[in-house]
Length: 252
Length: 128
Image: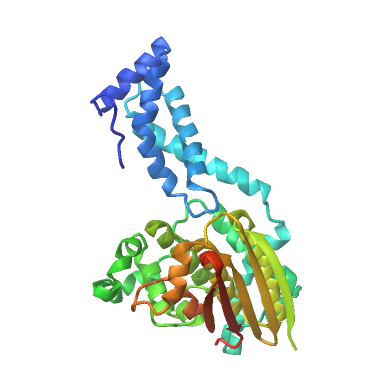
């Protein structure tokens, strides 16, 4: 984890302790300001993990900085851990709370949540049975609901993406079956023609890189990709969207 | 027989879900499959992502049986214009042009005054 540099030459936990002592015992707010400046890179690093979830990165960093201030406030000088170690979970907690509060504002009705939960297996089942991607009307009929409800429930998936704070591209509840097909990625990255995107691709897990290659290089439809990697179509769709957003942010 | 639908929206991430839901509703009326609908949403999502976060954009839909023609613009972002004018990207180069050429059946850009660009796309149903 990155550590902050500092303005006065030192960068050790011992320097932090001296600043903490000055702040807590003498009320020296300039010492607190130095602590904040020293650990802002840590906040930025943690905030970047929560980018692409519908909130501007600047806002997430500001929320993280509030977490840092709380950590400085609560840190007891007698603790054996460094300030950075102590502050990290507080910063992350503050960011997660921010997203949860936002999530509450756009809380999804339970009926839509339940419909969304049934959607993925229904789409995959219909695709298998029909031999093609089903229409919205067919999905609605299978779920005994209206097409409008289906569309709203599909949109719920993007809300969940925003609120699923522990899931990054590459981490997923359905496991990582594509870890077993690493060799095409090597070829993918080797080509000189593809070098331009290498830094952005490098941020993606091997599964995401493989899915993007199958979709945009080989031109496979989602249904076939889903079959190959053992995920649902909705899950493949979600990973493609997340990966493209991540890559774009990396290149900007 | 086709229907025309117009929409003007802010280029603001907060309105992304609204636009996406409207696009989904229109795609459903055209009887596009789940996958085709998802492709169309992705195309518009990526276009918006490249277009910045300020200003407004107009979307015009021409909806026929299993077919949607969409016009999006004007979009002033220089990088977007460059991406649209160079759709034949190198293999493996995951540009906006490559994404669009994968998820819609045809697309193109019309450069307007002062570098603004209007993007036309057509999505046909029938992906298997």
